[in-house]
Image 1: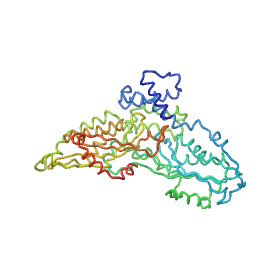
Image 2: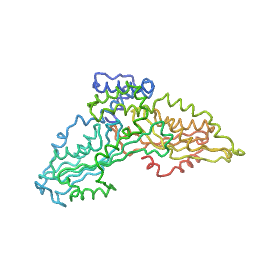
Image 3: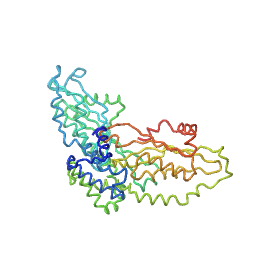
Image 4: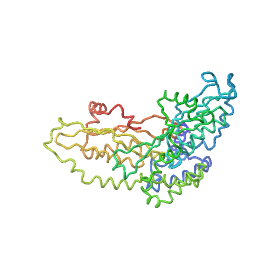
Length: 466
């Protein structure tokens, strides 16, 4: 799915031209119906602006992200094997045309089979040619993408890529290393208690065949040596069992007991996720997928709209006590700028039901003699608006308006975020980052004040998001 195609589709809908339902595949319609059930389970109106097209967007994103089920490695590799003089039936000569071939830093994404959230991976593939033939380099990436575009776990993904290349090009050996990054989304209850929440789970897995079968082989030394040029250091002692146990945060005991009662109270939502799995060509009864519907619903319930609104109303009570004067209030000319930077947030894109996350920077003017707002209070405001179906522009505005209502104006908010929908759909823009700004009061009319606040934001903010 390209952005042009989606834009054309949106124009058709917005101009009142209805899509012919017969043009949609039954699987797409089934996913749309399931997404409507999920939205209704969150207390949302599926007909409100912002959500009307969400079921179709989610269906298209999921089918695009799992297109690998319909692709065959043989069709990719068969026409891309080229004869090369100097290659023997056995291992090629190191340093010559028959030496190690490695393609590094392939940015891919896949969907976690345990929770249905996308995860990022950087893939490094190497092989030693044999049989007087080499494979087109782009095919290594395409084969890896075939298996990434399925519901996956890191170790199985590495094994499937390795096995497919070994049987497809018949080399002397294949080595695959994956650096995988899974978002660790906190739940709405615990995020206020854990200020040091780690937002990511990182694992590194490998798979090998042929001459790479011995981890002390020269081929491995060459492969790992070339990876070090990219700053990749591999701990080959990591076991498969340890990866399986520590990979997906939804499998942790702490997550298992959170919101379990709410999941049990929403069987329709669980059944809807199982329907999505079937529509993608998977078996919901496969042992790795049995708990997936419950895991996904447990995560999604974090964004239940009515629940969060009630908490926000309770939070607002008594807030004026925090702003009592601690001395004589100065004139406006003696106001001081205060700022809180790098307040973390996690949210859910209402257009694609995919997470986005990042940091919030808040600046405000406060007269001398008035207690400035504490970091914990501002962080609570950020979390209250983050844990719901959102768009970044609205999130930025809501935070600014709430802080302004407490202080009486003069507020500037900058939100920097990474959007999962930018990598797990057709556009696949890895490393992209979105910034939004909201200004109220003095900041809206004073360029010098805005510039002063922007200068206070540290240059390494982007690295803090990851």
